[in-house]
Length: 261
Ligand code: ADP
Image (cartoon, rainbow, N blue to C red):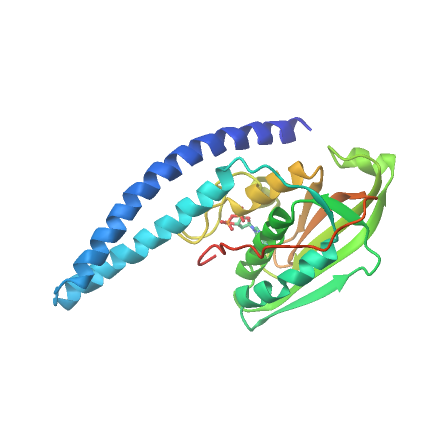
């Protein structure tokens, strides 16, 4: 529990810092990008020079992508909770998920038909699923399978005690599993920390799972990772059920897909 509290404080501090840096940095990048574009549009005919400038543009755009993610992470996002059907949310996302992953990755859905409702922010929960799927994709460069499962779980007092921050009672469980590289225990310990990444510079920001963690916390839920090197990874999320009836989802499909992730 201590560890979780520390994690929250750290995330708040990092969030404030990140927002400030991201904002200023974005202005600088906008300048770099516009001047590079101006040069390219001019009559610079030296091919080597054009190549170099194209490279500046490409890196600048990558930087802009990073600042966008920083801003999304640090924005004080007030969750707009509503009773919703998680299955409906997952179904709405199917098309987007198909676009995100390559042909050599198969996504299987295993959605419990009588799933209870949860109180959630549809946009934020979409982001959770997308971040988990993008990571699963990245862990399977030569292809594999992603399975998305939902189910009802009754947590008794003893189980709830083992899940810090959770209260006993009916929960919805969402799991995202992959057949990818897996992680060693040392890596697993750090994955929810902001800026922890094992991906190449420019490929990963280390904010995906920190964002997921923050969102699940805001939803009074809990997230767990089970992974083994070479044995794939399972992320398991528990969200408390609500007895309130849902209204049809007017989900906005996450409008701002992070580029190149
Ligand atoms: P990023 O994807 O930008 O690196 P994340 O916070 O989303 O940031 O993930 C942090 C790290 O956790 C990744 O760099 C990777 O090492 C590890 N990771 C996350 N999901 C998986 C997965 N499904 N399989 C293997 N490793 C993973």
